[in-house]
Image (cartoon, rainbow, N blue to C red; front, top):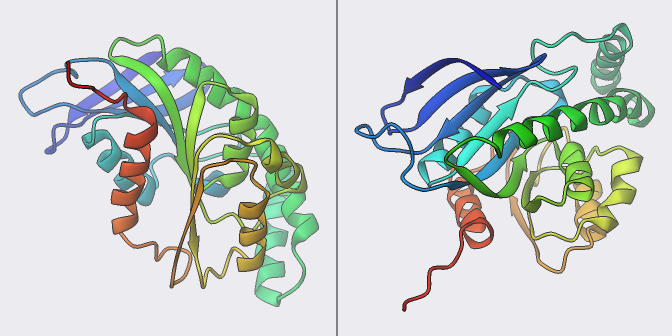
Length: 253
């Protein structure tokens, strides 16, 4: 892992850009304006965005900075096919077909499968490689959580990556068949956010996905509004969820 830039933000969070082979990423770590690093190792949160949007997407960055300021290391990457990474002609055609079908009110299931299914398969190795490298850095000690709008990716990572012990998912109406089936294998604690009027994620499909998860602890938060209307207070609730599962309980002696 090679760090290419760093800057200390006004809230004390240290933001560092890195490359790991062909993978570009950003790491946010907590601190104070006077410090250069966290005092003790902190838990790690992997933060992904949906459908190949870049790690620099403003909504992702805002969540990452807030989470880091609560005492977490937070990482986002442009996985294969995401952000500025090269995209295949097939993926670009599928994106164009998906936009056209949505605009025309036509069925999109098969188009969606042809786009998101391969993206998940290609992105998972990049995220696991990044996780390996991050956990070798000083100041990051785990445990590991996942938080993001790319629910399909989160489902697959929760199944194949035992180091992830809790996850927060956003929406999830359109999830490939493979991940809908894998949802039954997910047993870690979950926080599932649903925008009730989300034009891009069918409500009933999202509810069915939530029902399919095998976790004994799973919580659904539903709010009125469209896809980008998630209330800011959900960040606070998400932070408390991470605190419960990623921060060890300190008992009085």
